[in-house]
Length: 304
Ligand SMILES: [Fe+2]
Image (cartoon, rainbow, N blue to C red; front, side, top):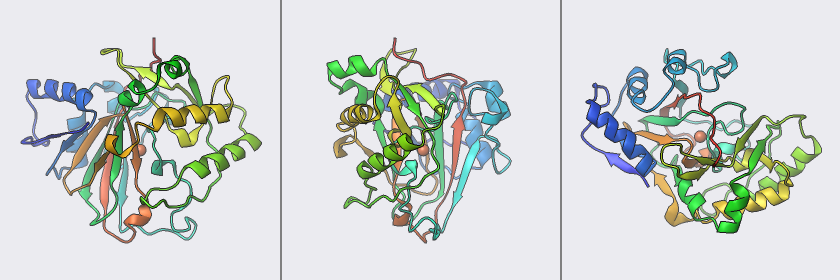
């Protein structure tokens, strides 16, 4: 997965055939990288318009299914820029050296735990890259689906995954690899959820989604915010999720992006699962980026 596109200046209007080719390539390669692009948030937002989106939602700066509560709001005068992160990153005392739970440190799809139609595409535009650390990890979730054994596919094809947001933090150990250990946290989190489960889920989405154009299926999931498939126990659900995701997240299937200033990376939210790496790895170093979402008002389509 992953393709670097060279020779384009994204602050300039792109010819129609280039736009069409980029729309094709992003679904073929899952992650597109453009280097040397130091552009404003307005340039970034204009560029992302070349990908399929809901124009009204885009104009309004919405990310979800259209209600005002789903409005991004924007920053920097750009409604599509959902976040601007600036470092040197300082870990607060409360974060206990950043070892508290944050699902961004585990594999996830943005917005999965919300009752909204998630954005179709997300982009990060790196202004200043940390000298070390801060890599972002990507896996192709179509491959995750395709590698799953047939008997399990028949279960997950119909699975609807319930998410609950709980306001509890858990400590997560750092692994030898520098990643957080999520397995022990999953258990602690499930226990806490079960003892104090809100009346209704914060979001419910099909685990397997199907691209209506190509028919290819992929996994849409944020395991660390997930509770259970409807009709399944949380333990069985997480056992299945573990089996489905394990081959996909093995080192040879992961694209690790080492950021450089000027990088713009774009990916489709529904065919890529991503993860950030611990903030403690770049604590105190300069780092600055914009994150943008492309709204579509399209639900996560179930497999048919
Ligand atoms: Fe994310």
